[in-house]
Length: 147
Image (cartoon, rainbow, N blue to C red; front, side, top):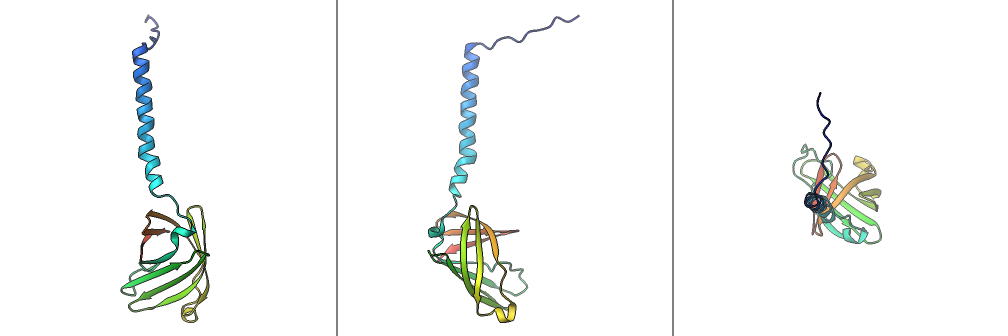
């Protein structure tokens, strides 16, 4: 009833245009996805060395104003101080390590832990949008600035 139509072969000009469109699309994908990933390249231990100020980890706002400070050393040691307006704080430290996109923090000493207990080990994903910004993320992200 209907004659079967055969697909026509693409003309050379159409093939060139299709190939160029594919190349442009591939290049656009690289710029859209690969370059932002480079901007959030994961740092090494040396990039974290120094003092970082930011919000208290796990703060729910019930204790009033709160802040925290991390100090990371090049040999994998850290100190952590957290203060709140109404609930006291934490003063401790230990060791940290980096594994891919995660930072592992283990407290091995804590001067205020007799009252609150030793903080649990913490594993957070992290990224550094620039050399002076550290973002630690679990359910929410906490942004620390280099001091």
